Length: 322
Image (cartoon, rainbow, N blue to C red; front, side):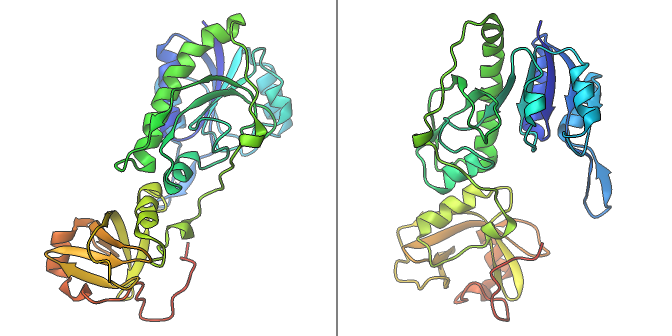
C-alpha cells in the first residue's frame, strides 16, 4: 500500500482520486483549489476534488498559495511515499517537489515532449493532429519538462472528438496507467526517460476571446476550433446584435462560392462561407435561447439567410466581454 498526497481540482482529478482509494492506496491528504464564487446565485462552490475528498472521508486542504511556510510544514509532517498531481492548476514549488521519497508523479494528456503546457488536448485538436496520448511523468521545476516513466500507445483523434470527450478518454487511460506504474516505480524497476527538448512543443492558456470565429479562415480550421473549444470557451459569432454560438458543424463540399461570413440556406442546411470552403452548421444557440439543431433554428429565424456574420448592429469588436 502506497501512502499518497494528492493534488487536483476538476472532474478528471476527482475520478483519479476515487480510483487511487479503490486500488487500496492510502491517501493521507488532499490538496485542491479554494472554493469559487460562481453561478447567478454567486454561491461559494467547492472543486470536484474537494467534494470527492469529503465523500471519501479524506482530509482536504484548500490553500490560496503553496508557498506558505505553514503549507510546507504540514506537508513535511505528513507521511507520504509519493505525491500525485492531476490538473491541480498550480506549479508546485521546488521545496515541495523534494519532500516525497519517490517523487511527484503527474498525468499529462499528451505524448510528451509534444504539447507541454496548460492546453494539450485543445491544441492537438485545433492543430489537426492525427493522434495524441497520455504520459506519466516525474515532476521537476519546469513546465512539463520532467522525465517520463510511462506512456500510452498513440490514440487516434477522430472528427467526432471534442476537447471534453478526448480529455475524459485520456485521463481515464492515464489513471489506469498510473495505477499499473506505481508498484514498479516504488520498487525501482522503472528507468526514467528524459524528454528530448528539441522535439518539444508548448501550448498556451486558452482565453475566452479564442472562441470568436473568423470566417476568413478555411472551413476545416473553423470546424476544428468548434471541437477544440468545446465546452469552453465555446465558439461564437454575432447576429442581429446577439451572441450566436456555433456548437456543431462540419466542412461542406457545397457552397464553395459563398463569401466568407455570408449565410446561405440550402435544402434546410445552414451554410456559412469561409476563406476556403463552407461550414455546414448542425447545432447552434442564439443568446437568450436554448441550444437547438439547425432545422428548429431555421423555423424560428429564417431571416438569417443572407446575413453577413458577424453582424453586431455596430462595429465588430475583437474581444468578447468577460
